[in-house]
Length: 236
Image (cartoon, rainbow, N blue to C red; front, side, top):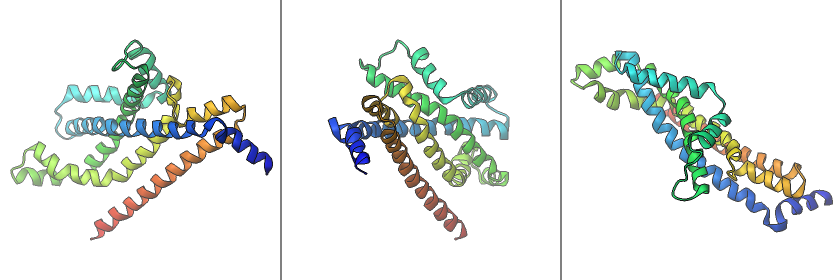
């Protein structure tokens, strides 16, 4: 027991090493939230283009570009995309005069673009699941195709895929653990820094895993509550 207490003090109390975890957690949440917002916007746009093409045959060029985007992003590892974004695409670019800020922006872009591909397919499946009769009904009421999508189809599709989108947020939260590959001190990297200073892997890695587990459990609980609320509203 005394050995565990001593190990805990060495890894977290001495030199305020616990701050590596708290600061890393803030970075992880910052990158995750930024990537979620970007991914949702990009995903919805791609989903609308793809579903419009599937239903009407229009937007052929945009649909072709979207299919390339989906194929490339979903077919390559996230960590490779992150490093290409940082070392190749933005290798010599400094945002707002700060290299550190550049890393955060690149990470948000990389994770957001990756998430957008998965959000696009989730939303597209929701749109395509809405009965075509709903669109015909909207057109018969005098709505344009754009109005029908905005007022009738998208609200139903969004409600149907909301739990899946929430789960994508959970997946994205865990995927950001590779942000350390471009020098960002996120939660995982914070634990790794502690390990490199104390030469003890057990406590730092266990703490990182525990923090991720707690966050995922909280988010999973919120998703379950959301699913129950949606199911209850459907019955009424």
